[in-house]
Structures are given as structure tokens and as C-alpha cells.
Image (cartoon, rainbow, N blue to C red; front, side, top):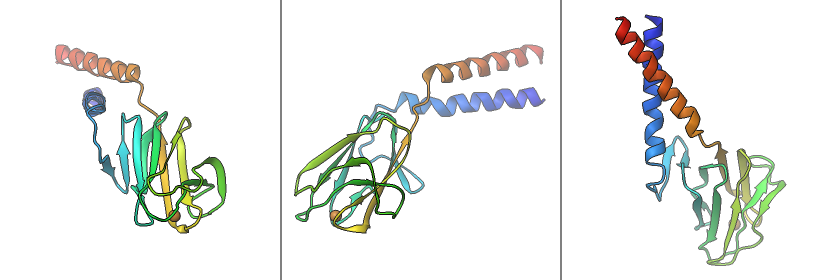
Length: 160
Ligand SMILES: [Cu+2]
């Protein structure tokens, strides 16, 4: 009985992973809201606009290796400057756009996994954002899991 439940869980997990693989490149321009963050699985370039003294979206989740492109749409100058933590306003030196005038852009490619908090130099704590960089699931690991799930399922059916 315990094995049957295990096999069922494996099959469910396999199915849960499939849509992520199959549809990751169909493109969700707005991202997928997961809690307070906006996720962009499978996207290699994610746009963050700077408008109304705020980052849109302020909290995003991207794949490792993806690039974030910040574009300032305000008349005022803004920056996207990495900081050591939320609200510290202390530069971490990971990335920094320098002052962006209207319609100017800055891009940074995230090659490390982690949470990267950032702020706007002129506007401090009132203008902050975070980029959450996550690992891309290994396709081989997923195939292995699907295979194992199916194998166990068939063996159980034969024994039943
Ligand atoms: Cu600003």
C-alpha cells in the first residue's frame, strides 16, 4: 500500500513538472504571479519598467542565466542599484545602472542563484525591488522521475 502511494506521488509529480517544460517558451509577457513575486520561467529576457517612481514589477523570479532589462519611463532620473539586503541602501556591487534618463535602459544577466535586492540611488527606500534567481530544473532528472513513476505503476498493476 505504501509503495502504491509512493508511485502515485511520483506520477503526480511528473505531471506537475510537464506543463512547466511544455509551455515555458510560449511566453507570458506579464509573468505568472506566485505569491508576491512575478515568475518568468523559461524567459531569457525580462523587462522591468521604471515608472511613477516605482519598479514594475518590483518582485520578480527568473531562471538563472536570464537577463533583466530596466527601462526608465519617468522624466526623473532613476537607477537600479544592487544592495546588500532589503532596505539596507548599501551597495552590494553586483550591478548598478548609473543614472538613467527617460527612455534609457540598463541590462544585467544573472549568472548566480540567489535573491538580489536593489534600490534607486536618488530615491532610496521608497524605490526598491528584488530579483529572485532560481535554478532551471534538469530535463534529465525529470525524465528519470517520469520513467521511475511509470515503471513502478506498471509493476504494481501487474502484481495486483
Ligand atoms: Cu528613483
